[in-house]
Image (cartoon, rainbow, N blue to C red; front, top):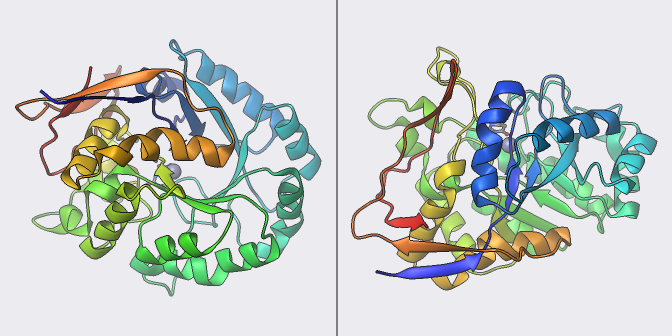
Length: 342
Ligand code: DOR
Ligand code: ZN
């Protein structure tokens, strides 16, 4: 039986939500990961220092192992720069999240007018505060499959030109346009989700629509998926794991207007081990899941290790997480996974 030992991985993009959901999902991340960056798109969003402090306390109640949770502030057109700086200097907030208005779940306080955030971005550049971006152009004239490319051309390139030293993560990238752009520009890195590596739009749409694969940015065609896999397994240090694990109740996904998000935390590492092995790149697995992100964010690499073994038969996926009346579907790819964490 094959066995590998790697540095404990990190999740550089996760949604914990609040209340009951928090109770259900924080322990799942805590079981596996050493560090994580937590998204701020709650209702209402985390927009200032005191909200971040309170949210961190609610999260911490469910951390039983050693998970370190780094919080983000939701950038609005009215973000208070002094408050942000205080939050950052007091280490209550680690980074700032930019959602274009209407791009995804709870993005209705997002950014429409880029000029309105130039001053905050300049402060962030000066103080080395990382900017995390949901990179999709929400102009209704643009086809949903082209939103990432247009965002790069029309918005990201302007931010990068104006603030060349700002450390930017283009999150959950889905296209070769994003890969190319990141490779060519200093100070920009990309996070990649397990579901964008393991699935493509055919998985979501052929043979009946699969609402549990609906996420934003939407799954793209296979050629993009192949490029994502290629760069993830390549060992390029500009690319690393951000699961974008985004729980929604099953009833809200299996719906006439289902919401976007894939909950993938429990099997992310096992799925990725399989993808890296399938591409003869297990030697780069640890870099992608445990090293590159810490380097970009200037954080210490985890001291703990985890062990994975390759089974003779495929692992069995648990279908759902459940607490009281809340049920969440767990992501499962269409291929067999033989790797398990022990
Ligand atoms: O699919 C997604 N779900 N993409 C996002 O950007 C947000 C997330 C959520 O919060 O549900
Ligand atoms: Zn997200």
